[in-house]
Amino acid sequence: TAKYTYSFTGWNGVSSSPVTVTNDMTVTANFTRTVNEYTVTFSADPSLGSVSPTSVTVPYGTTITETESDNTLSVGGTTVTATPNPPDIRYTYSFDSWTIPQSTVEGNMTVTALFSTTVVNYVIEIESSNTAYGTVDKSIVYAPYDTPYSVSGDKLTIGSTVITATSTVGDAQYSYPLSGWSVSSGTVTDHMTIIANFVQTVNEYTVTINVNNPSYGTVNKDSVTVPYGSTMTVSGLGLYIGNTIVTTTPTPATIDTNYWFGNWTFPPGNPSGSTITHDITVTANFESGVRYYEITFVTLPD
Image (cartoon, rainbow, N blue to C red; front, side):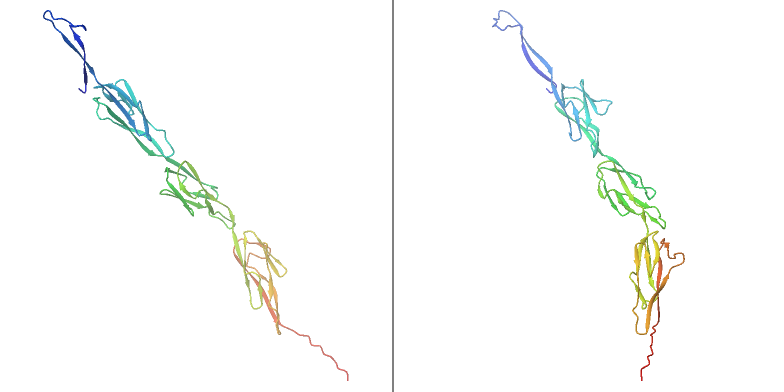
């Protein structure tokens, strides 16, 4: 039967040698009964965890009992332990339950340890390269393994989370633009720090060169763009703006008119020798006048 095996072990009342029957006698056939043993095999998905031992052989009717510790079983006198795999960069592993066909052993059977996975969350720290120059609106984001991230302008997107980098409001002299992020795009595979890089830049301003009467003369530049604090100085007929000189060229004289450069006109607050702190317009003033001729009188001899 499933439970027992019966075996003949010999006769009582006779020996191994032939016996002559001379009177009534009793001969007994001796049998034994042995409880059958069966193998319980323990299995697990090796990519998730393991069991130890992997099998035990126990008598029919042995009880399989889950212990107070969820990941162990008691089978007869043997403790079977299910152990989840160590965490890797993608998952943590945990024991879930046992699949036990029945609670008593009545034949060969397999018991399976079931494990589950949880995607690892990573810490993404977002920092400003210089908090005096600019800030970010989130400092920490938790993102599962393989979450995509990308940047576009002042936005950093991690999964569905959007982080904005905001530059400090500048003044007349300085601006604080975002020069870029320390990453471009990718997926999260570890803890990481992403930096919004802000820089301090000197503002530039434009000096527009106006001509009072273009028919009287010209200048070699219509405008000059220079950094904040550059100087503006008259030098002869020209004007130095930073390292750039603006030259003046009067219109060539005609038969009846002369043209010449007169002076520079500067806006209030920005005379010659001042520094550039904003956009301004200066004017090159040309003048004209009637051309005079010299008449020489000569007395002719008689």
